[in-house]
Structures are given as C-alpha cells and as structure tokens.
Length: 243
Image (cartoon, rainbow, N blue to C red; front, side, top):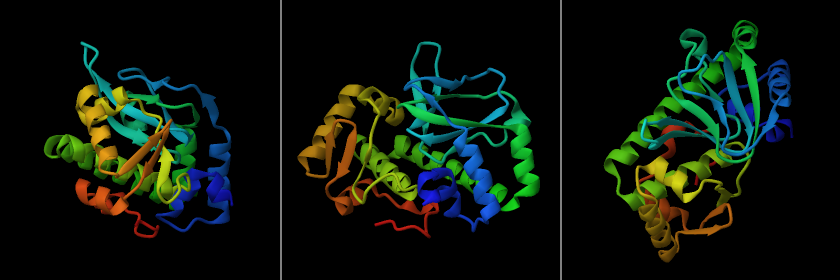
C-alpha cells in the first residue's frame, strides 16, 4: 500500500529492490511535499538552484523560453519524478521547471542527497537509472518533433503519458489525467494550437481517443500505438505491465 501512496518509492522499485530502511527514507522525503498551484515556476533558468525537486502529485514540466516569449516544453514530470540530480555540480539551471496542474512538491537539499548516496546506495542507483531514462525520453521527444507527423506526435505523447502514469499507479488500463491545455500541447510538440486542435479532432474521428474535461481515455491502444510507432523500451518498464 505504501508504494501505491508514494509514487517516488513505486517508481524506484521498478528498477531495484528496496529495503524497509530505503522505503522509510523515501516516505520521509515525500511526506514533506507541499501544495503548489498550477502554472507556478518552481525553479527559473539562470537562477541559483541547490535543491532537487520531487513531484509527488500532479504534473509539471521543464521548458526553455525565448526572448520573444516562444516556449518549448522539453519534459513532463509525473508523480515520482525528480529533477536535476547533478545540480550540486552545476548550481544553476539551464531551463525552467514549472507545474502544469496543482501539484504536491517536495524538495531535497544537497545534504539529503549526499546522505542518500552514502547511506542508501540502492536508492542512489535507482535515482541514477531514473536520470538516464529521462535522457532517453528526451531523445525520443527529439525524434517526435524532428521525424513524426503532427498526428503521430500527439499519439506518441499520449501513449507515453499513459504508460508512465500506469507505472506509478496513477492511471487505469486506458485512462489518465491530462491537465495540459492545447496551447501547452503545442509548446510540447512544436505545433500551433490550431494544428493541435485538428490533430485531436482527427484522433477522435478515428475512434482512438476520448477527451472529457481533463481526462484522456485511449479507446484503441493497439491502433494508437501502431500509429505512433510507440515502443516503450526507452522507459525501461520491463518489470511492469505494458500492453
């Protein structure tokens, strides 16, 4: 039950076997989470930054913003995700981290991270694996923007989001929260909001998805996965059920 209520522990348990002492540490970290409103910057590009951010509820993102206001979202952060384990080496972020929906957010000091590394090497290893998966996911997003059609981009993004949310126990077999606006989906996929809207309408017309409020339901997983050429291996969820 604890790993279900603590997506951080559940995520890491997908990579390693945690001891009771490990779980207790993760519980203490997650228990310190605080409510943060939607669309709040948690850390800004270029500013001094010395804490590791953990999302325990809701969805956040990383983004880069140009001087003209144009924005590119480069990652979604779902419950259980941490940000910037190497911040002790860099001290400043080269991007901004923000919430997309109302979130619960915990922060780990560099001292806590150092203690985990020294006293809980299994947790440290799992967190490093998670960081490597973040890099693999970014590569997949680059392929999405560079090589896939508009319809394929949205389809791939939806497939990935459902799989990631299921991995931490926050989605059903075919449904998950989708708090992003069409404008934010456009900032993610490198398209205009008009193009995003047309793509969503086409996915609906084909009977592949249903959007009600802020909930995404995938009506035909096999066909959506095929359209997107979605291969979830980069998420390293071999130990979890992926349809």
